[in-house]
Image (cartoon, rainbow, N blue to C red):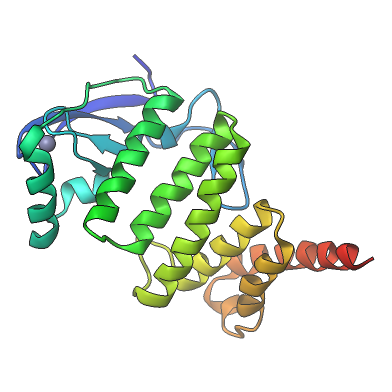
Length: 228
Ligand SMILES: [Zn+2]
């Protein structure tokens, strides 16, 4: 058993049975942070555990979805689907990358079925890309980074921020940072320039402002080099 995780019991919002889930201890020593928010730790990947699965009915979602009241429409759709054949998910205390990929893909399929928030869909796709970054599997990482960028963009257009502690400026930066990782300097520039034009950003969020300014400098030199 890992000293970085612990097991708790939670009631599944779909089948109402108690299931074991794995939680990650906070305050792990950080090795490095990527531009798009992916945090690396020594010998451990917390993104393997961001999705909980139910041992009884196979529901999969993040902690927030598991523990907050779900809209009736979502419950109806998911119960109709999952209680029919209750396929269950074997409880795994130490997940491999494959376990994590399976759990995240399952969570994506359920949030798509209920047409849940674009933000949640984006977050799952982004975390899936981070798991592939760890594997490493660059083709799949790029595929899910692209999907995450498009979903965050849809979320910005349709949903009210802040969401889960992220401001709309933070989400705009995140899309820019994802395109930067995808070597798409031009697309990255589209999002960063929106933030550079925002006169209030520096006083509202100085830390974000510094990150945007640094990346903006890199983007401009990359675009200059591309023209040569
Ligand atoms: Zn369940």
